[in-house]
Amino acid sequence: MRVNKYIDTVTIASKALETGGRPRYRLIAEALAQAILNRCIEGGTKLPPLRVLADELSVTVGTVNRAYAEIERQGLVVSRVGDGTYVLSPGERANKGEFDNAPDDKPGVIDLSRNTHIPGEESALLGEALVRLGGDRRKLAQLGEYLPDAGLARHREAGAQWIGLSDREVAADQLVVTNGAQHALLCTMMATLRKDDLLVSEHLTYPGLVVAARALGIRLGGLAIDAQGLLPEALEEACSQQRVHALYCTPTIHNPTTGTMDLQRRQAIADICLRHNVRIIEDDAHGVLVERHPPSFARFASTHTITISSLSKAVSAGLRVGFIAAPRSLAGRIASAVRTSCWMATPLAVEIGASWILDGTAAKLCEDQRAEIRRRKALVEAGLARLEARTDEGSYHYWITLPEPWRASDLVSQLEERSVLVKAAEAFAVGRIGVPQSIRVSISGADDRELIQGIEQILEIIQEGPA
Image (cartoon, rainbow, N blue to C red; front, side, top):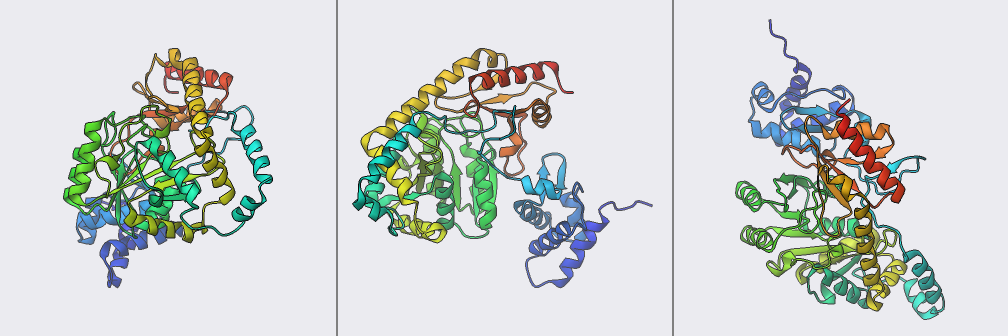
């Protein structure tokens, strides 16, 4: 007699459906989520394949797929292409989707996992700026008060100038000031999307997007990419099959693949979004490091494009100054989201950042950052030429495709045993598209000696082969 190895899951889902009254996928998802949290379904358990559970419950495959997608959004399970859906243990759930750019304090660790601003003159300049501000009692009094949620006029003027580096011309009244790019992304999503709306992105994407979508209850879909980034045909297919509310995209120095879209690709994607009325959230936090920036999506779809930028990569990570450029019809709603989340961007930090933009200091620091990126890459490019490694102008990292039979997760584990940290492609994965056996290696989180040593360790372990 054949034993149904999925009997616990089937029983739990069946009982949930008996209650009725709500969409079936929600009943299944809520029952499975509760069972996982109560450990009635243990970590590591493989859930039934979609068709198997659908047949057992007499529902459609689409219903089970939506239920699984919901509990994956909650961080309770992970779907592996070609392998199935697995329940995450409590420890795995705690780390699922985490993104952390704070340095690892463990001694001896070589951290090549973080894409972060490389320290330079900004700390000395910050000291000088604080001294100057200390002598301006009138300005300090203003900065000590509640300020407009979108930011002071001079701060928004500075933001408009900075967004210009993303090849987007905007007026100050289209600008909203935020506490960095992550806050900008969160406020944009709060203002323009509702729970259960569908937001699509490249299937390898910024982990902060995943965390924000999960917190807001927004569905996230991953779309196919190539060396340039998002494929227009993948976006067209998604829009033709279901209602896509917004596209999150990094067209310049894509994280993690380093790809940058050409003019034709940008126009094709903008045209699709206009035709299907899809809002574009353009992340250009890294793009400011490109000296000759390609056009913003706003050139082709100004009424649908929201551009996010910040000082975090090019000027100072700790200053936490970000900017959102939006159509006028949306700027007020986004400013309201800033007010809801923190009332206003921190005035003192924004004052320093804005003054640096307006007096040219930020542009100088940005150029210094570009030069330091070039210098660091020169230290390791000869060694990395032995691998299938790609990067781009202004990129803090390399995207390395591993030779067979390597799996990225195995290499990450073996490197960690030698106190070298890198990121596997899976850390950036969204949706169910197959994840490449690739790693992201950053040059910005280690000093020269550590960087060279870390790259040598990577080359050595890859040559040795999997343990």
